Image: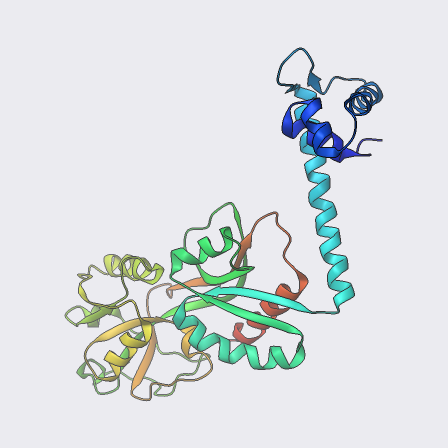
Length: 309
């Protein structure tokens, strides 16, 4: 009753003209006028102000337009879901990540995922923190993997892991001379470091445009430590400088969770309580996320939700 031939109503609403809408729909103007008369009579209310040129939606017409658009959205979602069922987990996923997360996380997740779902093609779009939101807005990706710092109401966030921010120090650094610690990184037993000991050390910071920079600055302010030092946008560069004993740096846990490619670096938790953020899968709220994307998100969760003491 309410949505039969609703494309007729949408076309009239689009052009605000019976004549233009009839031309667009390839039907006669009298036929389209009769349709609108029957619709308004059936609903018992006027949808357009017929005294206005061009036609103007009434209050009821605005609500009817909103209702029809919601039906369109629901139908599109149902069609997408049925299409996935017919295709039996076939399709393409585009995921946004920062370059350093891509270098560590994708080799961990993609080989097994591709073996389990060989007909799903995965593309990675790499960018800086602020670009990962833009990729979603521009529909360049289905979802992004990023830290949750300042949530936006237009996005939905699924937690992949509670990710600690670790302090990286060279094993030969004098600051470790009188500290007891575990040499091999074990996510279940990470030693803690009192930042007061690092008050006069050289820090290697991310750039101010990166989320990690702001998380670090907050804890340095709490500990009344001057937040200055060498800056680099590349986490790998920062760790390589620590490997060369140039300074100390901070690193999100996920990049070394499953393997430690830096044999001369010791990692510590910091802060009271321990400094962390949530690593999340981010996608647009109130928009359909294909089931194949959920399969990949679940694989990220499976690989990075690690039990700890």
